[in-house]
Image (tube, rainbow, N blue to C red; front, side, top):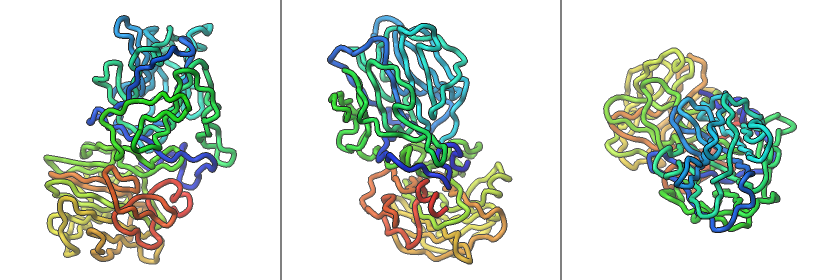
Length: 450
């Protein structure tokens, strides 16, 4: 699906405060952060959690934060449910669940949970906001005395109370927790006056309370570092510097979508790794482009038998049984096994074969008189290919693994990349030098060139 139309459409990018980094959680790696507080919380009634998230896997229960006293049913947790609603369990009082469902893996969502167990009425005790809007709750049970931030208890980010299930599969940015106040979203964000888009603001001037904290994920060597001034640092579990990302709520990068049909490849690592072990599978990019010059790289995984390339959105939308890129009329693929190019399910001689750990670059030129795609193997051009002239001329990127895996680098790689090559705007980290005039797929570039 194209990039979310509410958060950072391609032609509108809000100006102002910039978020540098996010943290990429992978549920298959059991990633989480934990802390046992050693001081008394400012309030057992009031706290506010503000966080930006970009979802990867949908339709599974995922706990954004949790704490549990280990004795009663008095846990605190904020989580996505299997139906993609957002729910807060208020320390054993019961569920407070949104009517809305959040199913866009291309979008950054800003979530604010503001609670006060001392307030009058359940609707005043628990408030959930998304993108600055107070959410209607299908169930609203209020809350009891909080466990999250409680002295001596393990508070966790990215998993449930027992740190054993409900792992999150998402990007998180600007995780800000206020101990002792029930705040509204304007403490953390605002609507842009030019675009009307909800955007983050600088939160460094807030009063965080005794056990409040602010995780900006900018220190790759200490991803749980609290920058609020409180020193409430979190212990990192199964997360490394590779999981730090430049895909953020102020510059949204392309990934692969988890909303594809039955031929969906298995996705992981922030929806940047696609793999299959039994049959042809596909993985569609979250962004489609109809103009501009764009560049990305693919890192080839073990036992590669796969194709990389592009497909016209018209072909994709009219065919729900695509097996591989290059199968359709307005689709171009480059095959690892024989180095051939595939267009309309016909192949012809093109370039070199490629195998595990090779880096395959892809440069797409939609601005020149003749629209072209050029593939690179470890920095060496394999030659320019003219794109088919029919179709809508809006192209998705469509890696197609068959008994193999592939990792996508749209600018924020899920693997250690030491190339250090960015585009002319300074975005991205690539193995090879970005071809002149080409840019990585992020909203700031799309606003300028797409």
